[in-house]
Amino acid sequence: MITIGEIHSGLLHHSHGVTTDQASQLLTLVAGERARQWKRPIQHACSPTLLTGVDCLVPLAPKNEDLHARRANGHNGSVRVIGTMNSRATITGGHLLQGSTYGSIKIGTKARRMPWSYYLSQPGKVESISQSDPQRLIGGLLRAQQGPKHLDTTALATHIFHEVQAHSLLDRESPLRTARTKLRWIAIPKRYAPEAAPVSLTLDSPTDRLLYFVTDEPDSLALAHAAEDVAVHDWLLTTLLAELERAPFTNRNPEETLRMLQPVVDHLMHLWMPKARVNESLWFVWEALDKVPGFTRQWETLTRQIEGRVNSSATALTRELLSMQSRGYSTSADVGRLRY
Image 1 (cartoon, rainbow, N blue to C red):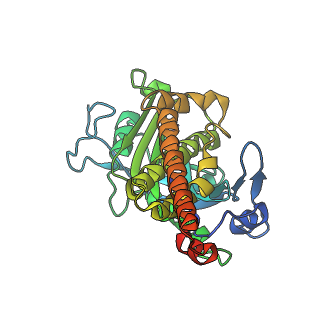
Image 2 (image 1 turned 30 degrees about the vertical axis):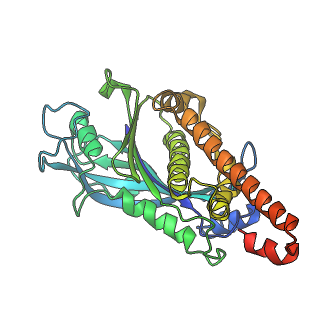
C-alpha cells in the first residue's frame, strides 16, 4: 500500500513551554481518552488518534510518465477513494505543535462502493474503486494537483492544528513570531519504485515541503513518526534561519539583538533530537537527509552563529554598563534602559 500524510508544524501560542499536565489537557481531543506522554529523551505528548471519513478523488499522472516527473500537463484523470484518514496532534518539548494526518491507499478490486462498515473495519485506510495503475497514482500524489473534490490532507491537518491552538489554556503570547511549515509525505513500496532515490525532500516554497521515501515498512504509524521527525527538524532549521536574518548583525544595538535571539535560545535550542521516536527500520530517512543536504551540519552552524551573536551582544551591554558606572552614573537608574 502507498501511505500518504501531511504535517503542519509551528510554535504554540503560549508565552512559555507547557508542562506535561498542560500538554495533556491541550491534547485531550476525544472525551474519555487521555493524551500519551513521553519524558525521555525529550518531553513529548500525543493526542488520541481521530478518524475522518473520506469519499473523494485522488489525481492521476499522465500515462507512461516517469514516476517522479512533476510537470504540469493539465488534468489527467483521477480515481475515487473511500475510507478513513488518521489525524492527531503532538507537542514536543513543551513548545512545538504539530497537526498530522496520514493514511494508506489500497488499490481496490471492487467495482462499486461498499457499505461504510466495510471501510470502518480498516481504520486509517482508503481504498480505490476498481483497479488503478499504482505508478500513475504515485505520480499524481507527487504532483499535488488538488481540485475541489480531491483528497484534502491540508484541511485535515489544519483543523487539528487549529483546534489545539484555540484552546483556552493558551495565553496567545508567543515569545517568537514564526511561520508554520507544511510537509506532505509519501511512503512508496519498493516494488513500485525499484530504481528511485530512497529519500527525497523538496522545498516547494518557503514553508511548503514534499518528502517521499521508498520502504516496505507496513506500519503506517511508524511511517508517520519518521515523517514527523523530519518535519520537526526542518521547522527548526527554517525558524533559526529566519531569526538570524531578522536579527541585526552589529553591536551598535546589542539590546535589540538580545531581545530577538534570546527567545530562540530559551525556547528552541533544546528541541533538536533526531530519531527520538523513529522505528530503527526507518532511520535511513533521517540519515539520508543528514548526509545531503546535511541537516545536522546546518543546525550546528546556525546555533554557533546565534550563540556568538548573543555572547557578543551581552559583552557589549556589560561594557556599556561598566562604562556608565565609571563615569558616575546611577546604576539603578540606567540599568533599566539596558533591559531587553
